[in-house]
View 1 (cartoon, helix red, strand yellow):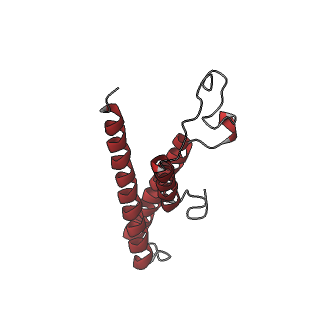
View 2 (cartoon, rainbow, N blue to C red):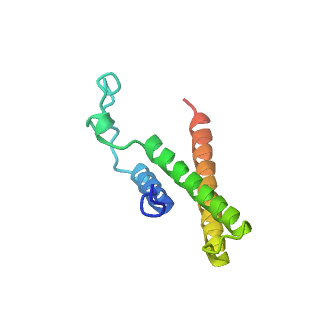
View 3 (spheres, one colour):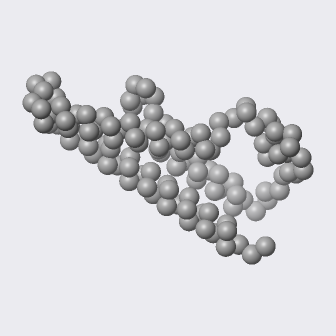
Length: 125
C-alpha cells in the first residue's frame, strides 16, 4: 500500500455510517422482502451479495489503514532515534499525530458499533 493514497479514509467510513443511519430513520422506509435472500446469496436489496463491498470488508480496510499508520509512525520514530539524517522531527511529529487521530477515530467507531450491538440485543422481541 502507498500510505495516504491507498488507505480507506475514516471520514468516508463515518459518512457512510451516518448515511445508513439516516436511511434507517426515514419514516417512509419500507421493510424489504428477505424471503430466501440468504439462501439465494442475495443482499437485502436483491443484488448479488458478492457485487458489493461489505461493511466488514470496509471495516477491515479501515483497521488495516490505522495499523499501517501506526507502523509508519513507529518506523519514523525509530529512524529519528537512530540518527537518520533524512528523517526530520517535524515528519515524526506529524506522523505521530496522524497515528493518534486515526486510532482515536477507530476507537470511537468501535465504541459506536458496540453500543449499537448492545441496543439491538436489548430490543424486546
